[in-house]
Length: 94
Image (tube, rainbow, N blue to C red; front, side, top):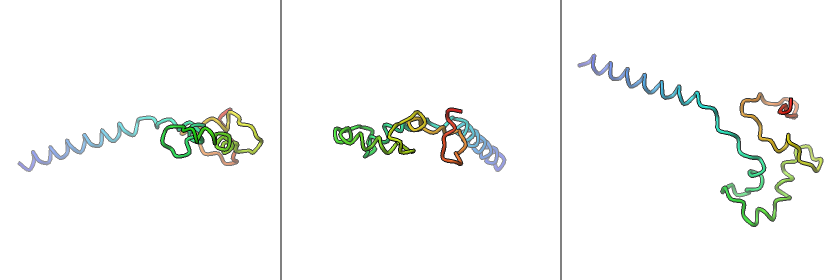
């Protein structure tokens, strides 16, 4: 009886570890769109009329270099697999 319990526990443990390993192999979900994130001030998934009215102010928060323009580097979400930048400049176009 003890052997049967031990085998059952080993089987359950192996199954649980296998399921965990499969979860770890899945790619991470894509990062949120920075424009939608900036516009959706209350993070409810809906851009309301008030949020549309404040769109200019919200979009200015994406202008990381303060030049008054939004470039692809500022609009593109960071790649979750990319190493962190050390100098504040994105390597996305390189």
